[in-house]
Image (tube, rainbow over all chains, first blue to last red; front, side, top):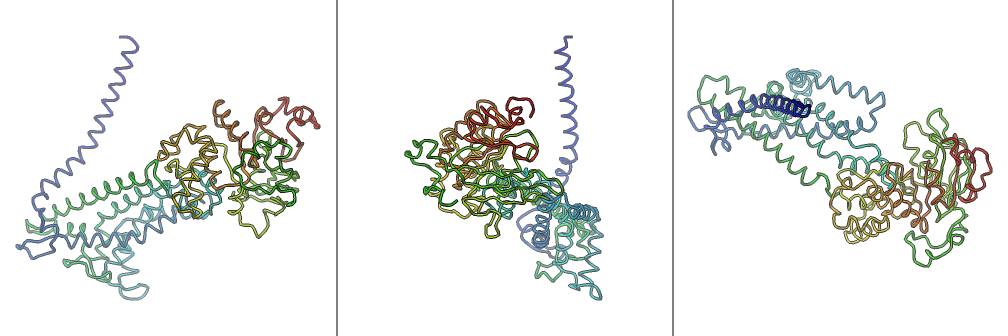
Length: 287
Length: 278
């Protein structure tokens, strides 16, 4: 065997090993999607997606939970995205200072707090009536706050990483054109980092979209359509959690259906943002 | 000093001015630097520089690495002070006006004094058009026809128009290194500065791209005041009208390029240009 053929076969062997490792990683994903579709697919119909809760036996839907989830994620995003972006910009552009090191440490600690502890914390400081608490009662607002608190550190650090990829020579070029620091950061650096920032935004939303634990103590859950930020609100993960524990076969099947809807929604949002970002902000984009 | 200023201030020149001889073209004292000291924290990079820089001419600032060349030109557009711990003392006057005076906003100054950097740094993800138009748009120019006109004019001035006119919507980073550097020159010219600072604009480029940039600078110096940092002695000799030699933060010698190269007064200048150090 010549040296070249030996090397060629060695190359093929390693490509084969890596290919099978990739397939091995895809097995759990495929199996999960297949289980969801096979068990939950049958309950999905128009009424299931647009109707709200009905007593067992009557045709029932999960739209109230879908809308509830969207409201909770909206509140969480309103809180976490501006704050996280501000943090990310500060860390990416003034990252060498002592204050930045301290903030980074705090964000890392925050990211490590278990979701259920965040739920208990918000319960004690926002939900509970009494001393040292805002006392909103179980509410959509408190649920959104809890989700936002989980989102914030994840988004801030990914935004930092995305903004850091824009070299500081770009800042100097902007300043040298007579632009203010603020314009340079917001219109050039942020603009160049949009794909990464949006990906981080999406990842952090997807991360909390599936959280049920922090909502148990805050949004509490409801079978009604969401009514006001101050009222208890249902959500997809919590509906899944509640229905899956019921003795009724129909509710368990609805839980599978809800799980499938949750996964498909996240997938759709992901593909949608990816498409928009590539189209509007990809390489060669206009200002 | 204002009395010395020529009346025509438009940087895009007319043919008659191009035909003028060097002696009448050059404005002898556009920028006056007085005892300029600058540094970071306790480190003093510039130790008191005093000189005048002529208008509508190319002045080369040369010297070995770390002598303060870049710091010097970064003081002229007040970019130096953007670094953490940076400080500046002494004064620089542009047409007699103190650029470090409290009445002058650095962003306004920087629109009059453009800058091109060592490594081509087009704005990432911006297309070619957006790169050139960035300075205008972000300072508030909205009208498309006006922008189109300025972008074309700047790209033509930077000798890049013919190469990119059919792909203005392609990313600026898709161009070759030399083209990217000319794109950066076009981006700086688009805001219509009077002075252009160049920080070793050819050091990241190959000889062919360097030659193109040098030709371009030779053309631009008829209309603009160019101040170029270089550690390339031959480059200074080829294209500069005046040459300034800095060493360890001190001004060693300055004069017309031909004088400085043929008849250096200071022995240190002589050893530098004959290649004994640096």
